[in-house]
Structures are given as C-alpha cells and as structure tokens.
Image 1 (cartoon, rainbow, N blue to C red):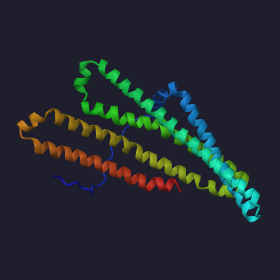
Image 2 (image 1 turned 180 degrees about the horizontal axis):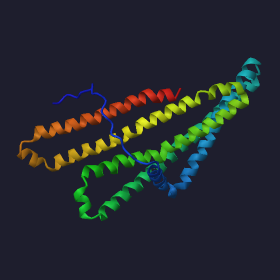
Image 3 (image 1 turned 60 degrees about the vertical axis):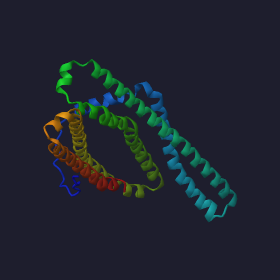
Image 4 (image 1 turned 120 degrees about the horizontal axis):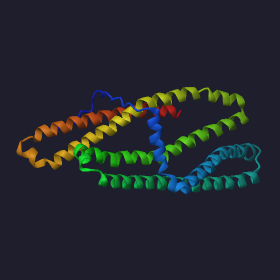
Length: 271
C-alpha cells in the first residue's frame, strides 16, 4: 500500500487565461437559469431585507432594555421588552428558515436543469466529439462543475449581496449613532477590500486547477476500469497504480494549498 505523503511541497498552480468578458458572459448564462424561479429569488431577497432589518433593530432594542429597564429599573418596561425581544428573535428565525429553504430550492432546481441540459446535449453530439473527448472530463464537468454553479447561483451570490447590503446599512446606522466611531470602523474597509481581492486573485486559478486535476483523476480511473483486462494482460498494474498515485498526490497538494489559503485569509477577512 502506498503511503500518503502529507508533507508535499506546494504544487505549481497552472495559470488559466480567461478574459473578464468571458467570465461575465459565463456568469450571466448561469444566472439565466434562475429566470423560471424568479418568485423564489424575490422571496429569498425579501427575507434578506427583513432579517437584516431585524439584525439592526434588535441591538438597539437591547440597548433600550439595558438603559431603561435595568438602569432605571422600569420593571414593567423590562418585562414587555423581553417578551418583544423574544418575539423579534422568533420572527427572525422564521424568516431565516424560509430564506435557507428557498435559496436551496432555487439552486438545486438550477442544478437539476443543468444536468438535464448536459445530458440532452451529449446525446445529440456526433461520434467524432465523443471520440476526442475523455469520459472522465465529461463526468467531472457534469458533477463537479454543476455543483459549483449550483453554489454560485444559490448561497454564493446571496452572501455577496447580503454582505454588501448589511455593510451599507450598518455604516448608515453607525454614522447616525456616532460619526467618529463610524469613521474609525470605516478606516479598516480599504484593508479588507485589498485582502479580499488579493485572496481572490490567488484562489480562483487554484480552484480551477483543482477542478481540472479532478477531471484528470476521473479520466485515469475510468480508463483503468474500462481497460482492466488489458492492464492485467500486460502486467501493468504497478505502473497504472503509480500513475494514479502521482496524479492523486498532485490533486492532494492543490487541495491542501487551497485549505491553507482559506484557513489564513478567511478569518482575517471576518475580523
């Protein structure tokens, strides 16, 4: 049994050249699959507005409870305020449930439509296409890439819009409460933006390389399974195992590098 080398040097990440125009075109095509489910999308972003509004109101409500109910010992106000706070928290929880449900339903239906579209397209392509295209590549695209698009059209896009909206509204509330405090907090924004852009420039080509390497692994495995008798007939088991282990270690190195990048950068951006 070949032992896994967990001290691999960081592999060289291939540079994937793709213009911004092509990237945006692909993104718009992906989001186009959400059009039949616009009601779910509208409902999801409506719940976002309600949840973000409650996220801003609840801390102010707690402040009033402390100032009036505890410090001034207004017992009646304290009792009703606690009940109201519980009610607001319950309402927020209900909207959070529907938000998660609708987001997942919309993204899963997009993935469902994409898989059907891929299947329908592959069945009508000529033999020449299948002769020059590796089955493992097709499997990787149909599974891994569709899953990435599902996440993009669901939680990823939602988190970006939700984060931007919450950032703007929080800044407005801070400026209303204390302009000096708001300016102090805003001073950290350029650093966070720079860190996010730097992380994106490194993580995007790495993520693409991981997907491509997974396609290579899938192709290798598919070819070995399909040609198992040929491999055994020529006693090439050790050679094929070694080739697969080499590709697998390269994929492992890319994945480990991706994990390190996320472990270092994401906590820094959440500060």
